[in-house]
Length: 117
Image (cartoon, rainbow, N blue to C red; front, side):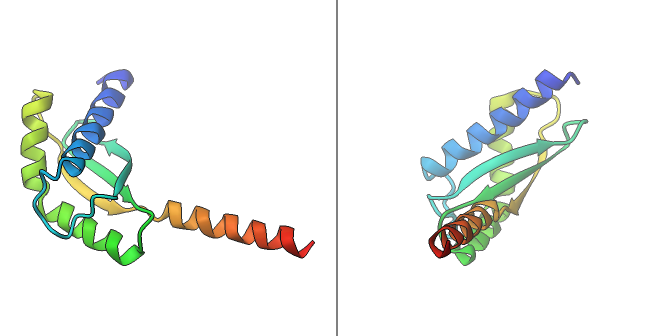
């Protein structure tokens, strides 16, 4: 599969799942409406996709949202399969991504150093 097509499939998956979350099509109450999908990594054979999820909310809310998304992954995968119309629909795995929290911690440390000097 060409690199451009591979990137386009990953972007389409990210857009479709984000839309489902915003429209509250995923009925699991654990899934927060404020989660965001940072990136999607699709395997080269298009059989597996790892979706990195983050939020500005507490890490416990993030973990619950990821658990809810993993629980609903079959439903989400079915919707993606209908929308993409590809031979293989990737099996989805949602993963906690704490990069936003780590970035905020680094910014706080930098601001603390600026105030000290």
